[in-house]
Image (cartoon, rainbow, N blue to C red):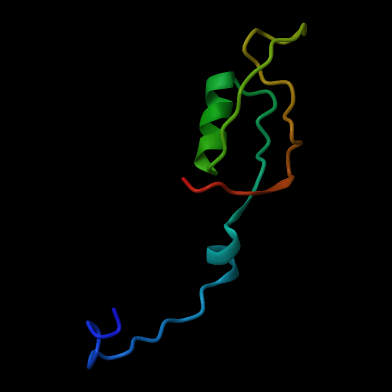
Length: 80
């Protein structure tokens, strides 16, 4: 490979930012009280996804009651 690049200019690159090296951080949004579909859309906007577990509640069916991890928690973002 060295001989193939002989005589070519050496390119210098900037040091990558911490975000590039470690990934972005996202905050779990407040989706409590939303419908499941709206909550999943709000999570997707920040690069997260979620599932659902059905529990007994006086709230209408399909209403998000809480999140786990809790809202406001900072999470490392997975690549989209």
